[in-house]
Amino acid sequence: MKKNHLQLVITVFFISLFIIVLITYSLANFFRDIIAVTIIKVILTLFVFFIIFMLLWEIYIFLYFKSNKFKNIKESIKIFIYKCNELNQHIEELKNSYINIKAIDYGQANYTDKSIYNYKRPEFIKLRDSKNVYNCSLSVCTNAKQQPFKYICKYFNIKTNEETLSMFERVLNDFSAAEQGKYLLKNERDNIIKSINGKIPYAIRKFEKNNLIKKLGFTEIDFSHLYFPDFCFKYVSAGGKSSMICNFVFNIENLNKFILYLADLIKFKKSIAGQRALMTSELREKIKYRDKYTCQNCGLSIQQEPNLLLEIDHIIPLAKNGVTTEENLQTLCWRCNRSKGAKIGDDINNKICNGQTALHEVKDI
Image (cartoon, rainbow, N blue to C red; front, side, top):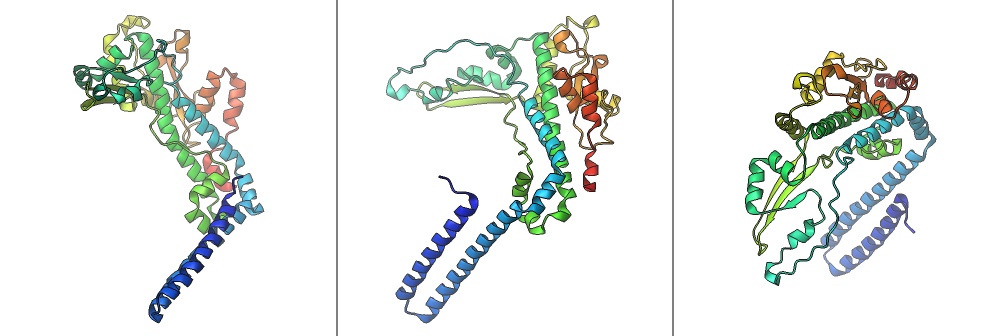
């Protein structure tokens, strides 16, 4: 059965103390020099005091987070913690924008390398089940480095049509919101913790910040970029001694470029006169500025809530033949946008948003 943290610390303490006593006794017998024995005893004594201090510190932390005082502080900001965690969950859902795209199922096949021992290529076996890795010749790998968009479309079956363009515009829109949202979320969380600084002991705030965040109930914010789609062209020579890898990551910058690349290859069919706007980062900011950084559904703005996550929404969804034009785009707060996607009525949506309290009011708790 697993021990909890405090039990583990106590166990380590007594084991360390027992070992120190044995070492001290052994060294005292080994060294007959009084000065040497004294130095050893002083060092070991300081070490014992250090272990005792760490034990007492762990006990103090354990008792503080179990105290009614801390529970009352946690209860007083419960609603704000809930809102932060709700936003964090929404950001994680945005990151799945590309993952949720239906991929073509080409079936499965068994891979067996029957070449002689010296010519087997184990790198192929490692990557044989990876969907975004293409094992290719040296020339393809080299050319992919020079023209990544062209070769990604060709070898990963990405069709250059308006449907694909709309899909990548949606991915960029969601990824941009996720990237902005996680930093707004951190500011929001920091403001909440700052509002209770006077009630939390300095030592806890200084040395147990991460533990404090966890104990208050905040879910961890993922700042990594691992969710960006990664495409890889990989060449391995017959002998396995020569190899080349060309990696391409669809981050925000590359998504913007890829959308422009697709737009140059496509003749728009849905839009009047063959023109339509492209959902780029520049257009996102333009729509926000036009709407005065205010949700067009509930009226909440960044003036009322500085860390408000605003998203760009298609008034007529793409799934219902809506197009990406400035007239068909609007600024919504993340709650209204998510509620719209979940088909929640406007009345309920307004109640959710209007019931929010601006984060700067947390200090009044």
